[in-house]
Length: 71
Image (cartoon, rainbow, N blue to C red; front, side):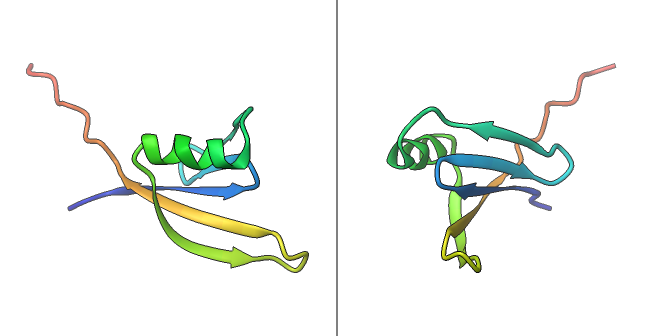
């Protein structure tokens, strides 16, 4: 079964969501952050505006299965 990982972008700040939660800040323009996400295989799945009118973009991409070592 396909597994997914998720990310959220606000402005040029990207957070990976889930088990391995951490924050990654791009030192780029917002457009540069979009390009970086696209280059890393992220697909936009939802956009939500918060109470202050700031947009939160949610992305997903398939989790790459690690090759099992032969014993």
